[in-house]
Image 1 (tube, helix red, strand yellow):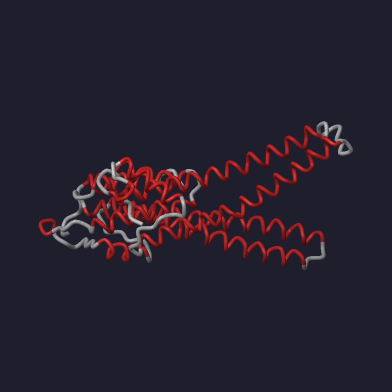
Image 2: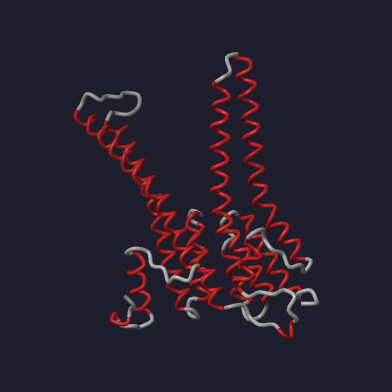
Length: 313
């Protein structure tokens, strides 16, 4: 490609990359950009798919890295504070650590934001931006060549495009609430064209919705148990645990805490399952979630008027 991409193509690429600044809420824009540009502009399609990968797979790696760094720094901070004996030194050390932690957090957020901003500037100038590690691998996976002249341009590999979009929809499970925008946007924009993308997008949306409902359920159980406990003991000002109603309230409170603890342990496992689904799809599998996948498959086949006996085992 000897000339710069047209302005319209560059605008879509810039918007796709900058949507990462919305921290999850903008994840639908790269899919819309890809959907509007596929079979029109390889440049915009590739940049949009790359931006989608950064906001889904890249965000997953960033959040996990951030958690590991914060845990390690926190452990080191606690160990350092434990060795301080002077009250004056302790206060100074705590203030220093608070400032260091805030600097670290803003620094990690800044790193996440910096790359899409650089990508947007590069695309605005008509450059072929590639994210570190992911960019070149994705270009090879999609069969994308920026240097190819317009008159000899061949489109990206359709199957790999669909697999990438479907996979990112599964990876987005780690983005609470807004992650559902990825599969539902793919389903709305490209579900009629691709049976594979249709099924995988609906499946990912249902799985993410179920995970979100577990979050909400844990909050309802926790606050419900706490409110019932307060009512059972006659309020905070006149607490009474001697009555049978007060004891019942205490039992309900502990029961609710156990339920919440179980859900809190389950949700990370569901996140891991979503990451595994995304990985298997990129490896070429036609992945199905246990139970959910089969139910969604039957629903999709009924919508497309396929009899149950034609559903693959």
